[in-house]
Length: 155
Image 1 (cartoon, rainbow, N blue to C red):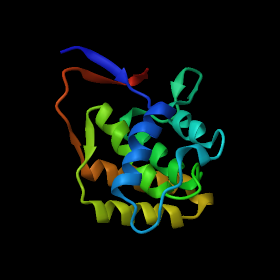
Image 2: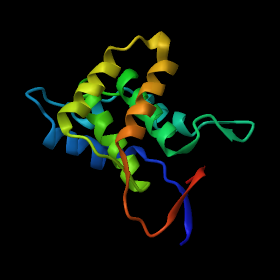
Image 3: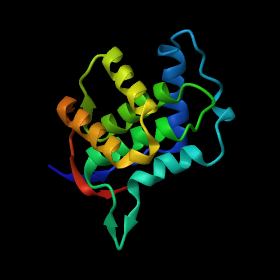
């Protein structure tokens, strides 16, 4: 079995997959504005931060920590005018699925968890990210992949 690095999401993948799915499937009576109304550079920052390194060591080791940071930032940094929690959920699910993982939990509990993250105190971000890691660890399943993921490399 070949091994492959953790795959990053691009802005285009968020636009064409996560954002569009959120608009179609998760409106909940509150529309999600067009993608081009997003705040410049905030989405890019949310996508890049989980992959930051210091002295060639990842600041967020492994898929779960990267996914937790992505989820947290997509909610707290508000890259969109509206629908940040919904887009965060789908962006995180797309990221996980592209890397052979999935969160096996019903939509409502996942959305309620996202609302809790949104209400959390930003000065306690480390603690909140650890709660997300615990939630993801509890609910994560492996998807069948042809290749094994290399936890410490990214593409």
